[in-house]
Amino acid sequence: MARIASTRLSRLLTGWSSEGPGPLPRRLADALRELAARGDVAGGTVLPSQRELALVLGVSRSTVTAAYGLLESEGWLESVRGSGSRLRGSGAVDGYVTEGRLVSFDARSRTAASLGGADLSSGALPGLGAVGEAVAALTGGDVGALLGDDGYHPYGIPALREGIAAYYRAAGVPTEAGQILVTSGSQQAVWLVAQALVEPGDTVVVENPTYRGALEALRARGARLVPVGGDGAAGGGQSADAAALRRLCARVRPRLVYLQPTAHNPTGRSMDGAARREWQRVLGERELFVVEDTACAELSLGDAPAATDGTDATDATPGTGAPGTCDSVRAPDTARTPDTTGARYATGRADEVAPVPLVAELPMSASVTVGTLSKLFWGGLRVGWVRSSPQVVARLAKIKTSVDLSCSVVDQLVAVRLLDRLPEARARRRAELRGRRDAAEALLRAGAPHWEWTRPAGGPALWVRVPGADTEALAQLARRHGVSVVPGPAFSPVDGFRDRLRLPYGHGTDALAAALPTLLECAERAVG
Image (tube, rainbow, N blue to C red; front, side, top):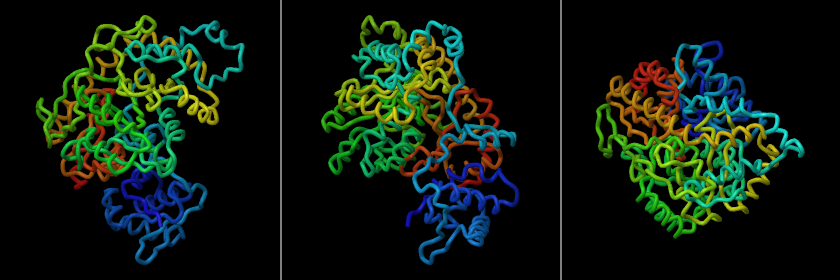
């Protein structure tokens, strides 16, 4: 019989303790019944033991015992001697479901806000004014030029595909429009890659931790996820270095490798030059297919790393939350020599240089680069892309067409205008994030001096170690006080990092300042 891990179940149960009438056991029983009725947990799944679930939810064992008892009396739970408690479902859906990654965008996050708390569950940034200006600048002529056809452009409108290709040429990476597929954000791009290139049971190598949207897409496809490395001493493993991949390949050949070399989500680290070269060497030697996700690469902050344990330490050392080989480092100061068709996207200033993909040195036929404008400009602008060989692009486009026919033409026209404003937007966003990151670090140094992190080289969040705490339980306790936060295991293919939290600062520090007393109190109660 299938079993569900307590950490995964706790993420599916987001918001249960603050919703619905009645005492806590009743609310927990109702939430579990809802999961079964919707098919979010397949019928026949064995639930965690009462003690294990109580620990991860931050409640007493008697609360879980009572909830299980209610479900059993109502016919939703069956106790099997020697096997535990089996949840009975309606059978409406019997497949994989996501773990609430987008919970910050639905009604349950609003419930948290109504309690006077704070939402720290999303790292999405507020939009830049350039988006509104680009929308306002659109004319009837812009749209009229495309009205002569049916409006379906499965690969993307030609102007945008050429603009994205020029973006890469500006960084010295030869690219043609035929190597670009426009997608509805980077999340759809990752999903398409999983659908097109991975079969159920295939081995896929991922960093540990990594982007949870990719974990969801790959798990939904039935991939066998194999992590390489960890994140410092607390990560419970080796650093995510290329040597670990080489050792792994001596035992098994992965179908593909998924990487975030620049402004990694959730850690914010970026590979230095030596690490990038070593990854390129191993990937090339082993002839591995690699998917490089550069969704957050435009949010590189371009300054040196500093491990932090509540002081102003500047050396990244084990035990202070430092990553391993993939340390946070300065972004490249210069791009490669741009060609004249892409020169408008790059200048000589480090703040305004487009990131160069690691896979630029690898065969196009064995690599995919995922990119987006949504992280830099605004999440509401659903424009991402895939850069790969024309053959891979065609394969992905065929699947995409079966889902949505094509992306919005209007969004793409806006994106064409925004490409011209990339240097300006990049410099503004990076300066803004540096200031907010520094303010968040100062807040934690003053309010939580025993917490540990490494200064991120990019991205909108801190990856924080909370010594002695089980952050799954911490997150559950915090939600009961109106604070939504994402624990470390959500970013791990093996439910690791039980002592980590991702704390976003992209909107400023007001939410973090409001949430910190609650998080500190819950950390004391959520003993790991």
